[in-house]
Image 1 (spheres, rainbow, N blue to C red):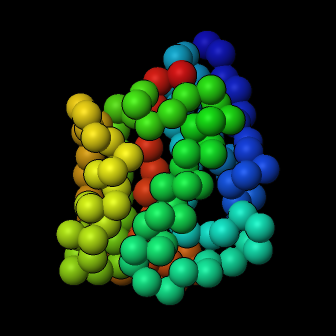
Image 2 (cartoon, rainbow, N blue to C red):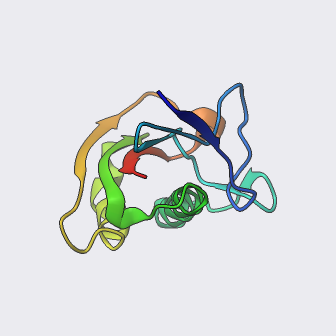
Length: 126
């Protein structure tokens, strides 16, 4: 079994003992991304739209570092602080998957790191 740690300087550095992503046996498993702006290391957007865009940008950079992109994503999990944000997140998220979207789960959670409004993790083909 081959296992490779994936890291991008264009995505936020890990805020704990984990990797941005791991590639193994032809799959890429990302850690959950919250809306941290890589340049500042802070959550800059206060609304769900801005936070969703930042999360998707972060995921795009991690996928790029792994030699992949959104067209190779097979499964995502979205964690929301409030299910009332579902429609707005769906609209922005959907723009990244215009054709044949991946399988997905969406759940509401009590709290996310740094009080983010959402977190998204994904599995993609390498």
